[in-house]
Length: 290
Image (cartoon, rainbow, N blue to C red; front, top):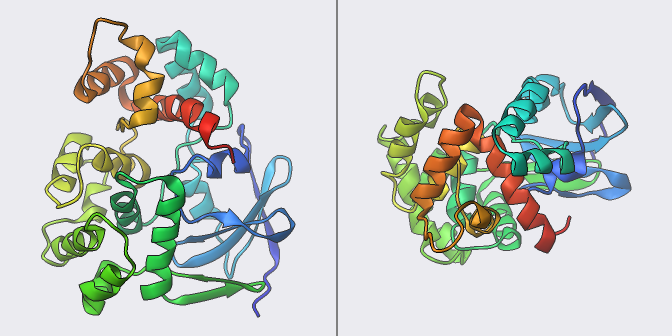
């Protein structure tokens, strides 16, 4: 059994770990004992909990830089909140209501891609179960303080195993075929997620490349771009965001999702993804408390 020392990471911004991890951006966090939360980041099993203005964590190595990037603690969150608040009074109210909300910067774009393929036409609980099942079936073993988890399999590992193990997990809606097809595109050099995450690759191009993959459509692609490719102008639209935006397009208007995205990106510009999460969370949290 591996037991690691507790490290502390200072947090000098509004932050609430429980609220951040309950927003259903990353599906691999779960409660652990004594107030800890267990997750797997870049092959590291990590336990997290908050103590005032710092994060406590246990892991096999120093993860300060990884966690700072993951939680976007390097963003000027005050300036971002001020900007989106100045652009819309309703979002300004949500910023005051949920000041600790964050947009995660997930470190493994491949894991994020598979997770959101699994999320399409599903719910958070089922998606969490499916993503964990894939890791348990095809990933490597990890253990920390009696907590046993698994790394997420690489695209190469998925291809080596073949499609049958994925099919046997009963992910539904041909998700095993969609995941395998995305892995093939990576192998063939037709999808380079690391390249798409570069600052000089625009959101429109990243979205276009993602949507060339079987199973990645207009809802899934913006989620991957926002949460793993650092395209924070991305504005995913699902039923929660549609419901949140209902008052922005009063009857008799019948806006399309494209109309909603265009409006949001015109209004919030490069920070549309932040505004998106406030709109999403305000609706989702009403029906899905942590």
